[in-house]
Image 1 (cartoon, rainbow over the protein chains, first blue to last red):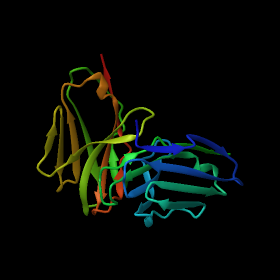
Image 2 (cartoon, rainbow over the protein chains, first blue to last red):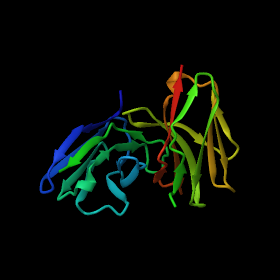
Image 3 (tube, one colour):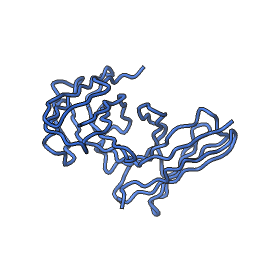
Image 4 (cartoon, helix red, strand yellow):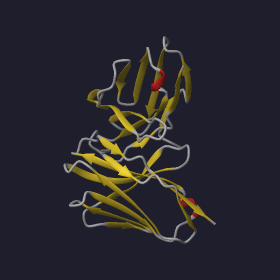
Length: 113
Length: 110
């Protein structure tokens, strides 16, 4: 049903692994977002991309590296993560980066061992 | 102090009840305000925007008090399908940088 898909839906990785999360939107939007949602905490914005250009980095550690090759795809490359990085990582998109209605994907549930 | 603060609940109400949720925000430069709804294990979806004059959408009424930095959502004649978590959301400037509250959980019982 959702116009925003994410893969994988679940990921377990060790602290020395390198993995990538993928987000794809089928809505013709130009802005995409990565969020983090930890247990009992609010959704927290990580990165914003508008027309493939990064417009916001919300003081995210460098072990998280985003990539936006085109307006429909967004990746989050992970390396040397910590157990406290275990969380749900939802992606979202909107028509433009100042639009307030964002459409969310189901998220990737990440567990770092 | 949290940027957007909500009572997490849960609020347990019978069908047909009227229930109100409150939210406060800390940044007086906030310009836009919203309520998002998140069903269990689902992604958040925009429920309604909140305007200074107050606005209504069917059984849902949203109010904004800029002086008190306070937002409310009133649900009348609650339905079982209203059971969800309601997220208070603020946009500081028109940047798309949404600040989410922790959410208030509503359980409507038959």
